[in-house]
Amino acid sequence: MFSYVKAQLRDYYTESEIKSLYFLIMESVCRLDTQSVLLGKDAQIFPEEKLIIERIIEDLKKYRPVQYILGETEFYGLKFKVNGQVLIPRPETEELVERILNDFTVCRSPFTVLDIGTGSGCIAVALAKFLPGAEVYASDISEKALEVARANALNNQTDVRFVRHDIFDGWPENLPEQLDVIVSNPPYVTPEEKKDMSKNVLDCEPHQALFVPQEKPLLFYERIADLAQVHLRANGRLYFETSAVYGKDTAEMLGSKGFGAVRLFRDISGKERILVAGIEERHGEFFTFSKQ
Image 1 (cartoon, one colour):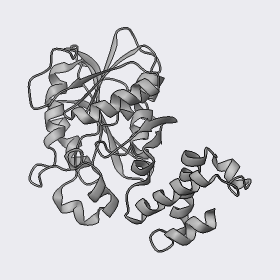
Image 2 (spheres, rainbow, N blue to C red):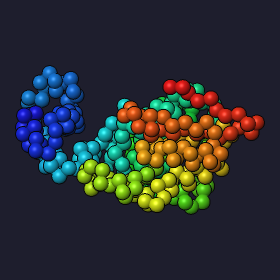
Image 3 (cartoon, helix red, strand yellow):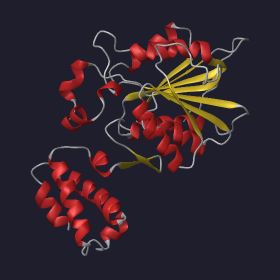
Image 4 (spheres, one colour):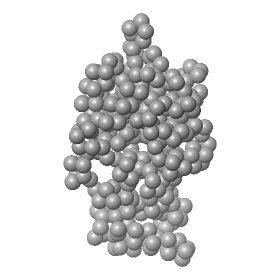
């Protein structure tokens, strides 16, 4: 079967990309994991499975993201439904979740977390799954995105409280007034950066979740920082996934607003993309952050 898929896609993708796509297709359509494929168990598949694979290949030739075609992806070891209403969760965002989990191995009660701009719910659901004792909230401006996020919370057997909220409006009554953690991976791509983006992202992923005005690249970071100043408890923490282009600018903005212990971490690709900041305690001390 691999020879057939390779022949169909060789004019569209590299061989390494085709192999990755093939493993994903086999798992989703035929329920064969990578080990089973390597053992040759994909040599015999049912006719109805071949028909599905043929339709997937036609979509791949149009450069639709395979995650949207299959309707699912994996994030932090969990399965997530995805469609064109939400961004596809990415490995860099797993590092953001890992940073939070490393910083909070034990949670006092009550311990409240808010994921702003939750999209598929990947951050909120992963934290609810692996951060025992946390009360996790998640907000988004898009009701259609929240429908996807609610389904993902249910499918992963997690308790996340979802709220439709435009962050430029007032604070909603159904969110806690005080939080221990605010986390966000907000829109940060400027129109100028479109020329460097792949076609499948530009044509398929929701622009509302991607783009900011050219003249206001930190629009969402600044607003969320203002909200954090009001709604984070003393000793609260703010976590951002940032643009590799504007990471340092975002860190400087947080410092200018009075946040303490502002730290910018490199992701797995070596880009400064993960930002952590603290709210000063009343007696003037800051958090001690994880050194990992």
